[in-house]
Image (tube, rainbow, N blue to C red; front, top):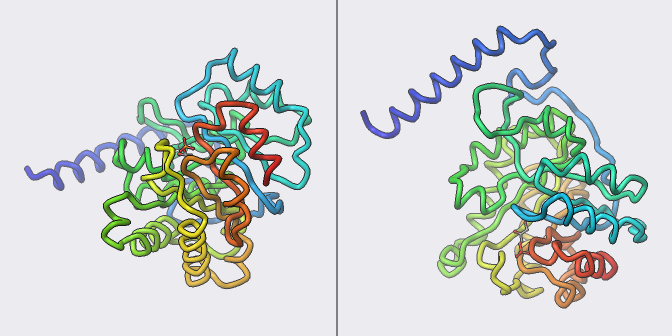
Length: 295
Ligand code: 13P
């Protein structure tokens, strides 16, 4: 049996198992989650801030470290900025308590598109919400390249997040090879078109896009303001084609990839850079606070 057939067979078996599970579940079905391909909700989350600064902690921080971090950032004035921390999911409820009253919100680093079932180690949109998360990072390049997530999988997650009232941060970005082959715009266009397939302009008012060139992540090699500007304005243009001008204008587009307090000012000046998705530097409360202050 070839690989494709085997994959399809496994997918069918999993679907069947899910159907049995679903039939045995007593909870009422959640509107919109039975078929993730059909968005039912048209909701608008409250993201009317001008800038957003997000901390992607990845697989870092333990309870004690996270508590110290929360205590250090809690009292800062975030003013008209949206600040969101994405800790490992098990820390989310503790962080929400520790940051109560600060205005800082919490998100999840990934999720499965289904609401429940036989998917060992996965976390569902219901669980993400149950943990108090209001945002979810989807299609991060580490998920795409290390865990082999495809645009189609990411699209299912985007729609499922929207259907459950969770704001997706859709990550897009090219590898160094792709940049050197002048394929950057083609890659970004495809990732946006496929990732957002089936979403409506109204739903996209609760969407954030993050441009994270793979070659800039964790390398200390940040995109220059000009490189970032070109891709961000291309993303805005593509969002205009997918939706319309006024919708695209309101979608926050973040830059991510070796953001530090030292390069924040030059990047944030660019017209289409609406904030940052920060990795390494967000593990230091002092650096993260400085990045927020500079935005
Ligand atoms: P670094 O800031 O460590 O390069 O990571 C960026 C990132 O992947 C954020 O999602």
